[in-house]
Image 1 (cartoon, rainbow, N blue to C red):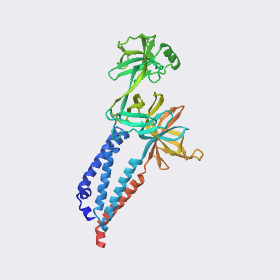
Image 2 (spheres, helix red, strand yellow):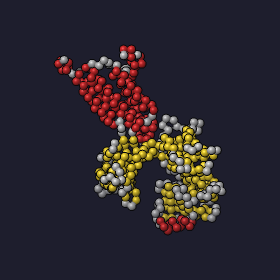
Image 3 (cartoon, rainbow, N blue to C red):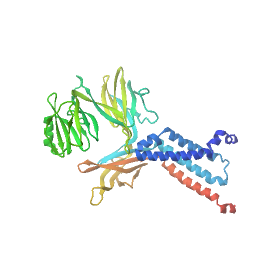
Image 4 (cartoon, helix red, strand yellow):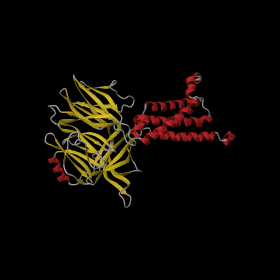
Length: 470
């Protein structure tokens, strides 16, 4: 033991010269994490601070310093009691933090009034791949330590005899809709136009596809742009009446190559006018100009993603590029977060899903009613709570309770908080609950109490009255 105490490495690990800089660095890291979380979001702070390998390594080194510092006082004496107890408390807190980091759960579950469920989404991105009816291969896709690149792709074996590569990953990506000319086998192809919009506020470049839901309109906030045929648009106007933005633009395809347009300004539709490819036109609102740069008689959407700067106070929207190989055949494409795609390859059907990991609560949660409190005389929400019930199985009795902003539910080791809500139609609401499980919490709380006890002992043994009695 004496030789250990005289070892230079042990002396360094147990020294105050190491402890003080580490405490200062820890304070700086925690402050940085707090600032990043407030500016961006919790996932961003986890990725760049709390979830990094070097932050975990730093906590381990700090624990090693505390342990060696306590060990260096051997053999312990009576006046070392407070010192040893305090260091034991610090070790418990650090151990609890590492356990939470490795095994903790953080996710969300959303329920509509009258709905029940136990499946929640964890804050852990996963990539799931399945060929035909075989079992799925689930791959962690957060790429925390190393991001895939075209020169260094991540390769995964997919049974039977399939290979999946991920060669690009963007933490925050912008979806880009392009167009590709359709071939003879593309039966779902439709007419497409390349629309350019420009004003002092916005500048957009979009492809619109005739009659393809989700691809036949552009929302500009206070205005909307539509692509239709004269007959379909007339039917829609008769059906929906004035249920349009006060400012709108509709582009009409007439015949095989003809184009017309109509503008709605401050709730009033103007006359239908002819439109030529490459000729700029004005809308009369938002000093907006537009033109059709190109047309394709038969085309399909071509979805890609481009890297985008992290948005303030918003969760990042990741995307990845994949390449699938089955025998000698290959297929590639992009997947945005919460996207899924099915495609044929070498006579078999591949299914890819990219999104949060699905996990199950050990009990069933039933949302009976969502209660929204408003400020008197206004429509501003003042409070909200959910009347819920829980049960272990479908045949077990329900246990009613209420979850509100300051009153979470503690059940079977999980804690459910009232996170948010939104209207879901038919006068009902969807209530969103945060789901958390912290297996290191007892160690952290226990360590904090031990630290307080140790500090009390440290002051007690330094009390002159104690020394006088001895």
